[in-house]
Image (tube, rainbow, N blue to C red):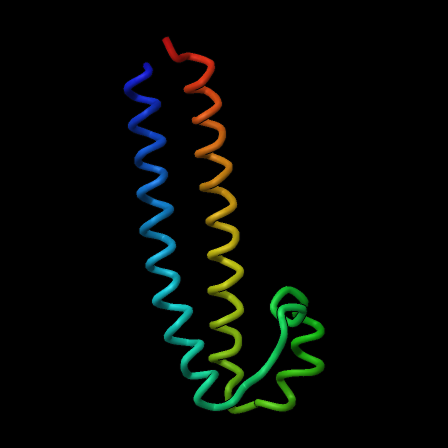
Length: 100
């Protein structure tokens, strides 16, 4: 049981590392396009779609797809990282409980 839990925690850590690298590449690629076109918005716009639609999209209608891709990649990576961190913490807690 102990070996299985350690394997799961190591697997989750590797998954989190791979996910981080994968989304970093995707986010940086989209971010580069936004920077090249001088698209600017703040963190408040990332998490509030209504604010993004009202303030940013009218300024950059030609970059709508890239802005939406960037926001979606950032939000998805935060969600996945949160889930993986919670799972690693859970299995780490179980490991501490069952350690010999």
